[in-house]
Each structure stands twice: as C-alpha cells, then as structure tokens.
Length: 300
Image 1 (cartoon, helix red, strand yellow):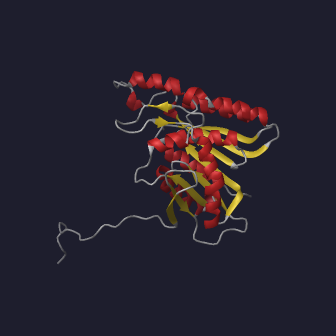
Image 2: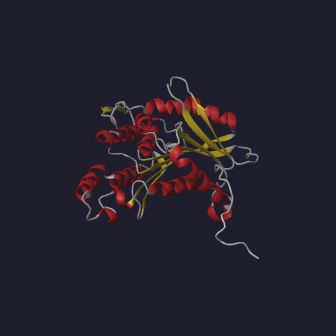
Image 3: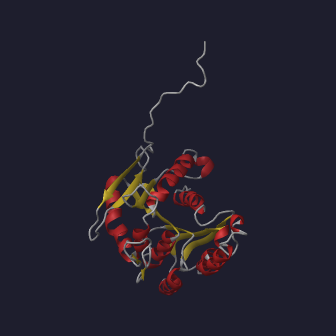
C-alpha cells in the first residue's frame, strides 16, 4: 500500500557549489584590505594559445551569472558562437553582492571627492581610487591569474556595470592596451560633473593610430528619460524623473558610442545597445550575458 502523500520527506540541505570554480581572498601590495578573487576555468587542457578571459568588477554580484551564461552557451558553440574560456571576478570578502564603501573608492576615477557616510557611524565615502585599482589589476592580479591558468593575452575583456562601467571607461581611456574588449553596462558617465568626458577627449586627441580593440556600451530602456511603468503614479515619480534627467544613462552612453564609432581611426569598433524593459538593476544579467558573448566569441 503506497505511503501517504502527506508523509514528510527526510532530507538534509547542503550548500550549493558551482563546478569548476574556486576563490581566494588575496592581500595585494599597498592595500589595507583583501580582495575576493573568484575564478572559473574549464576542467580540460587549454588551447595552445591559452584561454580567452573575462574580468568582472563587482565580482560578488556578477560571477555566478556570468559562469552559468558561459557554461550553457559554450556547450553548444556551433549554435551560440561562444567558446570556452576563463572568468575572473574581482570582489570583496563578503556574502553580500556589493561592498558600497569599497567599490565607491575602487571603481571611481581620480581625483575623487569625499561624501557623507552611507549609514550613521560609518566612514565617509571617498572616491577616486580608480588609478590604484587599475594598477592592482595590471601589475598584481593578472600575473597571479596567469600562474593559475593559461591565458591568451590577445583575448582579454573587462566588464563593469554602473560604477564598474565608469571604471571600464576610465581604464580604456587611461590604458587602452590593458584589454582587447571593453564592456561598459549602464556606465555612470554623469558622475562628478561627467569628468570622464574630459578623459575621453584626451584619449581621442592622443591616439591617432587605429587600436585593435572593441568597446560595447549599453543601458536599460528605463535608465533614460522613460520611467518604468511601475514607477508611474507613485509618490516618487517626480523625483525619479528629475534624477533620470540628471544621470541620462542612456543618452550619455549612446552619445559616447556614436562619437567613438565616428572616430574610426582610433577604435576598431564601438557600439551601443539598449535593453528593452530593463532598469538599472535588472539590466545586469542581460548585460553579463552579452559580455560573455563578446569575450568568448569564436575566432573563425
């Protein structure tokens, strides 16, 4: 006679792990705090030239999504045009997706400013650490990664979202040979009087020969002047509309892509993509998927 369907199932829960991934909390030179470096690489021999690699800022928030997107698509390369590769996520020793204080410093271009604390009895918020963070990636993190896994230095991509997107642009304009492909999603171009636009102008003035690099900018539909439907008619609608007019995430990103695409003697390719129905936070998984497709596009 079958057991009653109401009988409780006995089972114990265990932590979920992602296959072929690992992490280390690293203390780099000239830093006071550790960084959590999350690493994915295929469990097979690399190609002779090494693996293409995708570096992610805001690693805690981005790593798992990017790994899943890569695994799913690289399993069917003929249908997706995505090959295997390595993902390196730069995060912080925390179970939370973001460390607001540290990312504000690491991901913002110099010279930076000082702002009131995020929360009572916490430190002031400092910005302007982007130059130091870029040097950390180039001089310390990349060599460490190359000791762990074989990397194709001609196929390196940097991804950032929001402040991370701003950092991606700063890194491109400061050291364009650091990566070959650059993906800036919802970049905070407006930040601190849109100072990144000055860096862009300097970059265009100083680089006349064509650089073999690609830039992809993007933003969600509801990051521009158009508010999301669920914000219409709410008490904060006017405030959000005013804020959208200040940040102009869609407009700033599209205008930058248009300028850089027109400067065909500098970049090989510069594009902009608007993701329909997405807001500043919901756009992240979509943008990460596109970064995977760009970073691991098959070379034919």
